[in-house]
Amino acid sequence: MKTKKVLLWAIALFILDQIIKVVIDKYFIEVKFDIIPPLLYFKPSFNYKYSWINSLFGLGMGFWTHIIIFSFVSIMAVCIYDWMKTISGNDKLLNIAFVFGFAGVISGYIGTIVWNGCLDYIYLKPLFVFDLKDLYINCFLVLFMWYVIKNWKQLQSIKSNEMFHHFKRRITIGIKKLKLK
Image (cartoon, rainbow, N blue to C red):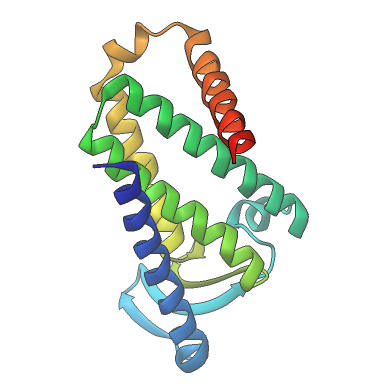
């Protein structure tokens, strides 16, 4: 799968996440019902603390802290994906993992800006309320770990400074392209 196709799928998942949130906000914000009792419930609520980690641990991180974190994570995700594609070629598992990863990051980033937090709507009793973005991120983590386990021998043979040099080359090429325009 080409990088462009990975990004298109990620954008499609992001759009699905946002459409669901708009519909819930407009028509179902006050509705609550059982999905799989006694475990899962539909229970919409706004999380104005920007992330469940911030809410769970009471870290007090604000809007700009989250914007900076999402920006950093976005840049790192693109760099790591680019680097891993050079190692393993066009690995389907890696591509699918990053479809979910990019969708989760985009949803979190845009959600923080547009919703000034997050509209969560699936309640995992008694733990927390989450949304599709959180599922995307968890799918990414599971698939990425599976990819790492599957390719462990190949990944072990890589020298630790190779990734740094790859990033440096890519940044240099990107800067040269910008100067040419």
